[in-house]
Structures are given as structure tokens and as C-alpha cells.
Length: 493
Length: 113
Image (cartoon, rainbow over all chains, first blue to last red; front, top):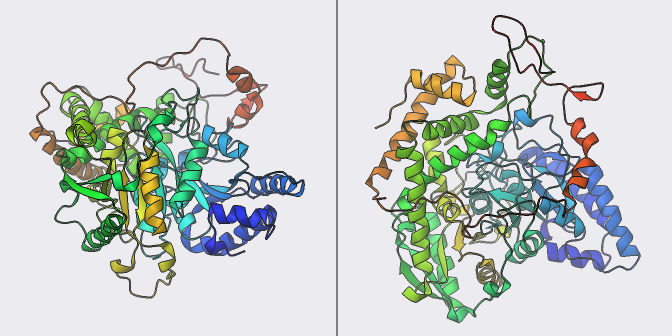
């Protein structure tokens, strides 16, 4: 078995051809992780017992001649804000270091029913807040292509694990780009589904009007397999919706028009990113796809709107970590401790710097006297951003089928480069956050294949030219099939 | 332009129930001010007669269900008592212990356990 070469599809084929058993595969993965992850720090903790018992069930099925599901035995990395029953789940925060999940997230339940295997909980920015993978109470994750660089965030661990072959695929969550931006930085595929396409029951909430769970994979085909497995209406998440399958018909590529928004191809866009995306556009043109310039005029204001709305929701969602309901770091020292002091101390000590900054910022934009100028204003700007997309996609106005942009304005940056400058870190989300504000589906696809990068030697000089770059395809609501189909054809090319 | 100073930061940390160490205040104030200054660009946007967008869902309808255990949810939850108790840090005689919630002015804690 060649771990480096494995996709969900190839893993499945190896399993049914009995080239390896699920147990052998899982053991080999853990063996590989034990060496590799010393450098990368993609996993917060491994779930060996769970994975081996899942593998043994798959092997029993295999031995009894049962037909195996495409996902059976597939070793996955799960972001540590998604609950797996019985497993510690921390969202990479000190405040949840003693928390053990008492139930399965719906996506986990679905994957368990398909006999997928969970290797462990993947590192992330604390409570999914950051853009670099550096904000973890369990230490930063490194970019497998260059250990001096960040993997992006916040699904840093899931993405780095897949990019360094420590998992065949994984799950992340995306609130403003947290699946797509790291996928771009690490050279893998990441899909943020339409808001409502995937149940969020059992996802530790960050900003509820923006959060979505999505797949991270080596190929678009694998991302599609995972998406198909986790999507759908869930009675436990009232924001989830039933997908209307008649929406999911893909036209032939020759009938597709892709829009290129002026506002995303701006001066100041990194040259390597611009030329890599240009190459991808050329390839897609070669497949017969038509391109057209479009305008999304309110793009410029997306970061401001996003960094008002998201912290506002964060400040409400994270109120539950108060030292009573969740997050008791230590046993109470004395009976006479004041409740207010427990709140202040637990939250002051338990949250990291970025989380505290966002809670305070969110408290500010919601506070009396500032609500209208910030929160109410941002919600209106959010509507304008959504309207821009609606107009661009409107068939009666000669609209496009799909929109193509760079995923991030730069390739992976250096560890420490932006950590002390939150505003510059926030601007990393400039091409991804508008999609969450509108609720649309989008995928990041590497412009070069992962196998072009084998260098992890930190001694050699690094040029951004050799770093992965992703492009983003944004689809209409619930038209994941369109962007997946274009992605698959691009990959096959 | 909204500005943020030590005094209103204190008010905000009190509202958010987060203790900030004094040594971290200056950096936090600087970062917050920089972010707020960036938000100033929103003033350029004409939002007159624009309906606000408060959620991510494009189907703007309430979702109701009958108040019955039609999905087996409660049975599922009841089966989890032990697991839920297991995640709680303190327990005594089958009761979960939490810190005192009610205080008598000038006195010691009363109730809450």
C-alpha cells in the first residue's frame, strides 16, 4: 500500500481487491502519522481504539463477502469542533480541554453508517477563529509544503493531514473561508457547501448564520463522495434543507459560462496567484467553457461586514463557556468564590487572544449606541453583497452559471508574519468571506497537483513560486453539482 | 468615528465577562481601534431602503415541528444521562455541583448547590 497515492476511490479498490485489510491500513496510517506529525502537528489527538474497532468491523464485512460502501474503511481526519461520541472535543481551546462529547454530530453519524474510519481529531484555530492555523491551544500546525509557513486556517489540521497523506480525506468547517483558504495554501480540494446543505448538529457553533461543514480531499471526486454522504435535511438542525434534486442537473461544459469578477482580480493580487489562476482559466477555456467579465461591486465591503457580523454572533455563541455550563478548568477552590469572578477568570484564562478580541469586538458592535452604526449597517451591506451575486447569476439578465476567483490573495505566508497584526490576517479572507455572507456553495481546487511538492526540508530556500495556489469556483444556491463537475473535468485534463 | 479607550474597554470586558490582564490592554486597544477604523469604509455605502439580511438561509420561513417525540430524540437523550454526567467536573450523591449562584449582600453564598 502506498499511502502517498491514496484517494477514497483507490483505497476502496485496494480494499475490495484484498491488497490490504482495513486494519492493516489503519495501523500503517498510525505508524506514518507517528513520524510525520511530529513536524506538522495536524492532529490534536488520535482515536486509535475507535479507528481500530471501526476497521475490524469493515474487515468482518469484507471477509463475509458483503458489498463494501465506497467510504468503508476510508481513514479520515475530523476537525476538532465536530463531536464524535466518547471522544474529547476541544475546538483547540483550553476552555474545553476536559470536554468529552456525549453524542455524535449528524455528519459523524452519517459517516459511521457508511463505515468510514476516524483516525483522530484535527488541529484548528481556536473555536475556528483565525486564518493561519496558529491560534491553537495545542500549538500551530505547519504547512506540509514548507514547514516555515502556515497551512492556513481555520481547518488547518484536517487540510494539512490530507496534504501530507496522514489521512485520505477529512472534514472541516467554513465560516469565512476556513475550508477553502487552507485548501488553497496546502494544495488540496476543499468544498464549502450551500448554507443549509449539511446539518450542523454537533458542530461547535461559531457564527451560526455563516458556519457550514464541508469535505477536504485530494481530488474533486473524493470531495463529491464525502459531500454526498453528509448532505441533507436533519430534524436536529432547523437551518438544514432538503436539496431539490432537480436543481442539480449539470449542463454540458460547452453550455456553461463562467464569470470573472473585476473586483477579485485587483492590483495587489500576488503575482504567482494571478498567473496560476490565469493558467487554470486557460485550461478551462480549452474544455470549451465560455468566460465573461462580471462585476460584484460590493466585494470591497465584505471584510468589514463579515468582521462585524461574525464577531457579533461569536460573542453570543461563546457565552455558554462560562465556567458553569462548560469550561470548568479546575475544581472550584472555595465555596465562597463569587460567580461573577468565576465567569471573568474562566473566560479570561480559558480563551486565547484572538477569541477574546472577537468576543469583545462583537460585544462592542452589538452594544447600545453602536448597534445601528455597525451591526445593523453590516446586515444591510450583507444584503447588497448577496444581491450582487443574485444579479450575476440571474439567467433573465444574461447571468453566468458559475463564478471563478482566486481562493486567497497570496500563497501560504510565513509563521508569525501576521499573527500580531489582526487586520492583515483578516484580509486573508477577502475572496472567501463574501461567499459565506451570501450563503453560496464554493470549492477551492489546486491549480497544480499535490505531487509536484515533495519538499519539506526547512533548510532550503523557499520561493512562493513553488507553493500551492488554489482557484475558487462559486456556484448558485444548491448547485454544488455544477462546481464539482467543472472541477472533475479540470482535474481529468 | 468610534473610538475605544481604556474606560469603554473596561465596560466591554465587563459585559463580555472576560478578564483582560492590564499588560494586554494596550495591544488590545490598538488592535480594536485599527479594526474599527477599517470599518469606516462602510459609511460610503448607501443602504437607504435596503432590507437587512439577518441569517444565512435563503428560504426565509420558520421551521416548526409538533411538540412530540416523533423522532425519538428524547429517548436518545434520556439514555445519555450517565454520559452527560461524565462530562461534568463535580458530582455528589447523584447531583451535579455548580458554584453558588445567589449571594446575600455582605454575607456568604446561599443556595446554588
